[in-house]
Image (cartoon, rainbow, N blue to C red; front, side, top):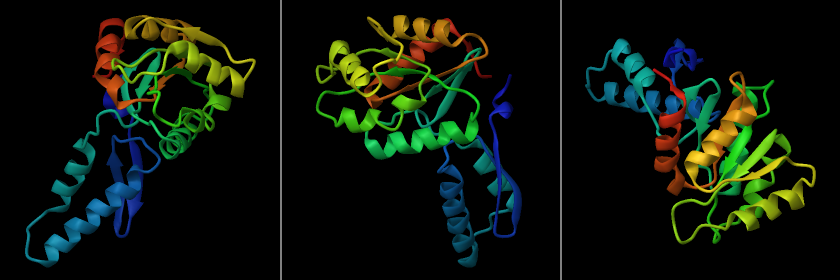
Length: 204
């Protein structure tokens, strides 16, 4: 599977069949803003071809923002760490994977409103693997597990000691055809990517 598998198509103004590899539900709006900027530059004399615009949209990357980093299972990393980000993450999951409930890897900071962060996503999870981000500000896994359990007493919960263990547990729970989504802290992205790269088949 290549990155071409994970492509969103949309139309805007007179432009049809525009393609981006940013799958977040909000990304077509961001792309439309970029198109407006290009049109404004053209009005000021800049020579920007439609081909260059399309190529730029297609090649744009945003690490850690609903980023598909592996397959078998499909593995998404998202830096959502506040309630608004969690709601947007849920919308992106429901839009792109409407028939799949993800196994969530969650690690949060103790000074964040993690109860509100969890609220939209907990009902959507097939299971949860909790882990501590690599910072002194991390919420202990026992506290995070209790927070999830308080919102969903029947949730399948697993505590991991480090990101390699969290990734291994989540991938086993999801299975090759499943979906894993890691969220909760920007501090976790580098550690997650390293663990995913060591254990899964990356998206080419």
